[in-house]
Amino acid sequence: MDIIMYLIQLVQYQYKIIGNLLNFICRYIPLKQWAYDDSHSPKYQKFKIDELPLILKVEPWDYRDFMSYLAWRYKDDYKPIKPVNRRSDCDIDENCKCPCCNAPYIYLYKNNGSKGQLWCKVCQTKFSPEENRHTSLKLRCPYCTHTLVPKKDRKHFIVHKCVNPNCSYYVKNLRKINKDDLQEEHGKSKYKLHYIYREFTLNFFKMDLNSLPKNASSLKFSKFDANIMGLCLTMHVNLRMSLRQTKYALKDLYNIDISHQQVANYCKTAAICIKPFVDNYDYQADNIMTADETYIKIRGVKAFIWFIMNPKNRSIIGYRVSQERDVGACILAMRMAFRHFTKLPENFKFIADGYSAYVLAAQQFLREFGDSFKFEITQVIGLTNDDAVSKEYRPFKQMIERLNRTYKLSYRPTNGFDSVDGANYDLALWVAYYNFLRPHEFNKYKVLNDIELLRGADNMPGKWQLLIFLGQQQILKLQAEGSNCS
Image (tube, rainbow, N blue to C red):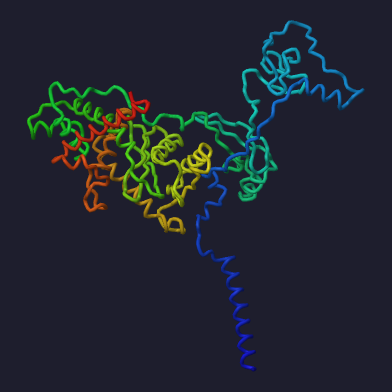
């Protein structure tokens, strides 16, 4: 009996020790670190996207109802609001009304003389007839419900800011910063402390992804034939030759005297024909996508290319050329990748780096389409696996980085592009080659997307001609559906 009691006491003592160890581990030894410690730093806040604001709809009201309420509220002490007694001629438009209470111009008078601001005598609202800031929808901070103030007007969006000094979001971030910075004159400006929302003035979800560039040459050949066009595409795209190298190769190998400008015209025409087929092809995307951007040069100035890859079969399902590294191009590339989705699959993962454009684009998809396109960005930050996220999703990030380097091999002989259209034509041809014509070690040196029609071609120029044919069929299909592909 004594042995049983001794064993029970021993088990209870061990249980107490284990509980203390678990408590210590949970407090001081994180088993899985899912984010960098720097992500909690106030300096890192500049790269974070805040959640969507609260939207308050203000019900319209009439100035006559307001005056009736005042008469009921104050009864005998109420003095009726009379129209403005003007001592001189007034140039206020007779159609001008107060944006808040809809009071006519007889209750309006100039607040600051000739500078344009008006003051409503009924509701005491100050406004300018040229401005449209008094709307029925109000944006409010989700932390303190304070009305957001428009601060900056950028190219494609307006920056709204919560200026409430007692906002919990602001107070929490203010506690994190270094006290020495607070003593400096512009110390707070180093950090993002206030809640910020970007309201886009350009709707990237209404832009037509099927529109085709213009100024393409005809496929009616006068001097050469379709086989010469296929040879030009094979040498320029497959073999990564420049336009002039393609010209010299055709002259030396086949005694075909063609100018480098004619080679460029062939490539431009082929890109316009093939692009609709490449963009609208159903790549059977999985529930994981990975994205990245890389830079190119257009007339010596940096431009950017956005890639979105399906890791399941390594196909490029979204791409875009942009002169700026902004969220607009990111949204358009995502729209191309989500083209065949009516709803995102379960457990969907979108893997990218720490650039804030991807998070902001995901927020805009949620705002536009609701919960059917709600997803989080899995950010793989840095070059080493210092956290659990990087360790698990680093292989996907390496796939897209490998894709960038593969594209740079074909881009390097061009020494940059002369225009954005040239970059678009080159990228469209390269994506078509990568997805449908290039043998991949990943797929046992077969093409990523096997098309039955292409199997009948014995050589690469013939496959390029069949791709052009498929593109023409896709253009006719889009035109029948009413897309802007004329």
